[in-house]
Image 1 (cartoon, rainbow, N blue to C red):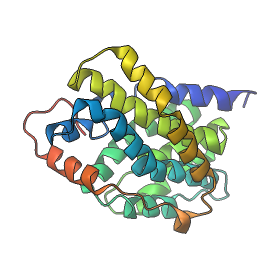
Image 2 (spheres, one colour; image 1 turned 30 degrees about the vertical axis):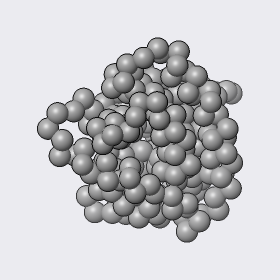
Image 3 (tube, one colour; image 1 turned 90 degrees about the vertical axis):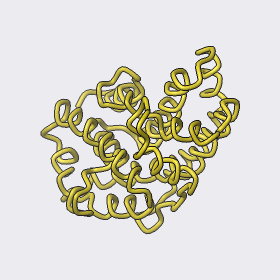
Image 4 (tube, rainbow, N blue to C red; image 1 turned 120 degrees about the horizontal axis):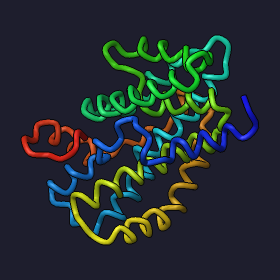
Length: 230
């Protein structure tokens, strides 16, 4: 593996054009707006996600990266812990759908790496649930030589970008405004990166669900008119 692969891996995961299916998701923003969230409160929505569900997912990615460097590679405990802390069935399925696209990428770029080969163990943790997005990001991070902080930041940055990209379609405005939202979210992102890296093991994984987001995601599943899958 060449020098600098970790840095390139972090940039790869930060690329909005990466063909892994993220464009079809809004991180539940569509459901939140349908439920009455005012458009001017989207920055607050971002902050709430970064302090709750996204922080849990960032920590899970760090644990998965560590598991991807173990011998033998085993993601079952990380996947099980993350699934237990994702009470919404709709959000578990959305995460697994995104994980599927990322796993396809991982198999293409590092298919022979033990961290990628071992992804099959994640599917054994919860019957019927494919590897969830943070688990696959951690596995890909291990295969690419990314640091724990880079993997955590990739999860958090992607969460913010998913919301801001969807916002331009759901609540049109100046694209530069959404860029400012991202920069304003930096303190919350870095606080969650630090919390993720400090996570010691699956039992220590933050249980930071957001009940309203869970409710909105469930309602969105049955919506008959929608732009995004989740």
